Length: 229
Image (cartoon, rainbow, N blue to C red; front, top):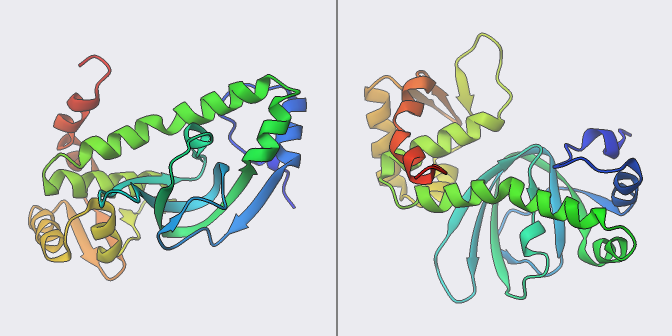
């Protein structure tokens, strides 16, 4: 079995003793969620060891859904570990997921003896804050921007075959969930991007023929989230 301490992409510098203590309290989980469910039983921090997932968050008092795309090396849950509200998570696996789970009660126990635990939690939280913010901002833009953003985000976490066109292995159903766009409207956007020869659509896979051109179209989004704005 691989050494978790070495496999994990730590969000900051930590003493080896702290890493060892964190790993000793870790739990490996496969087949991580596929339907909306209250975040009750998994109170703690999650590390994505393998795979890609689109995670949409809402609450019991609203129908608003906000999806972010996360993959290998991402940390989730740190900023919500002491949050009292019930959060509903809709988790769509784009590639099979394996996660490492660190339970809140064990983290709290470690923090009582090791102040570096707070450093780990802080950096684990801020490492994905920008991704959640991007997901919120992109939902305010037009359909084309939302689709392009989702495709590029998935592609970023997908292992690509050297010398081949960039591939995104996601169904239209999954893209519809991620972007919040109905299937008919999503299909219109995909056909438009195909007509511009920027993508090609096949069953279960979308090839990005012109990833640089697609990235250029996100300039308005980048200006919305620039730290200099």
